[in-house]
Image (tube, rainbow, N blue to C red; front, side):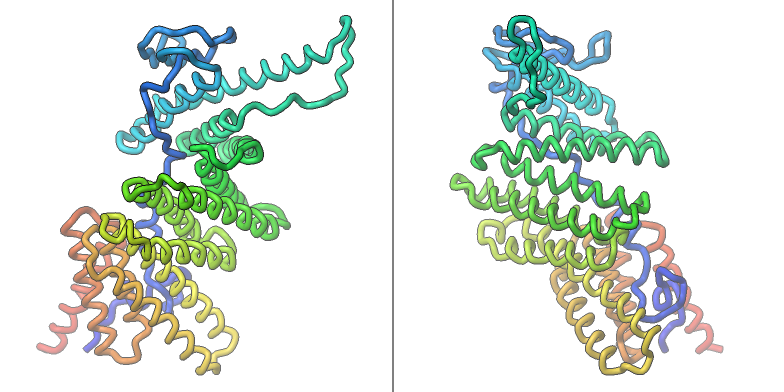
Length: 452
């Protein structure tokens, strides 16, 4: 006898009790997914140089070695070795900032990272102002201003990459404010970040070591702006703008991955590192689709892009024998699961409009089942709490589209067992704890009824 418990078979976003709706709980899991914190940049102590965010003098003299991260003015000062250009010194500050961004993700203390990022942005502003003043001074002849409004020549692409990346990264750490004020300020930073990264892209030859980071940064920034636009509601033309922004973001992602993939020096170790960055990009895309803050057709495009990239990575022989392969399988299963969830939602909407189209519903059910079975197979060897929770949800969805009570009950039991395995590994969201409790209580109630 199939136990009656609404927490599994009747949970849906609308609260309608539709058996076809996917169970809730993913948002809690997705919110716990590790968020990409900016663009991680490797540090090389031998290449660092001297910089002070408030120094406006020429910075070409050798500097003493040492680090003074927090002086009395609470401004970061990086002292580095050897001869250094102004941009070299700026890069030293930026690399230190990104190191603190990585540390902040673990320690949950953003003070040092924010201070260094502000120092980076402050120095970028100063360099840009000096550059503009120098250009203006060259337009004076005989004391008369003959400037024609022309813009100064661009600085090197590395400068704009650092500037844009610092602007993006600080928005990821500055969440103290709430409401429209925070959204407006964040949007301004992201828009300027996208502009600066675009200047870096336009000035690159494409062979620079940081070239792929520029493309990746542009994609992340554009996607973050789309998310923010969704949160704020947007304008009447928001849908059209989002389509355009998404196209640009996907192009930037493709450029980033292509730049990494065509690196002639990429050995297996480097390929694994590049795959980590690629997986971060896919995870970002799938999380945005999972949030459902964009139009359904945009979510479909995001998931399709992620799935195509993951299939390519799964076939890469350099990754097949590494730990990265399990991460690829997990994200691919997540992409398939999101596709199935979208089809379930679309099917419910179609049922509201035309309840007599049984053939269409059967075709939809078959596609959903195929997607969910493929996702479940990818997660057969799941060993992490996150992967087990996803497999449990996949099994729940499979149960929701079964035609017989026995098949449904069997899949529900498998799902609950999977959730319990995840619970043994570590803490799980309350929604899953409630599912376990409701299922167990439902079984006990059925047994009591049979005994009586």
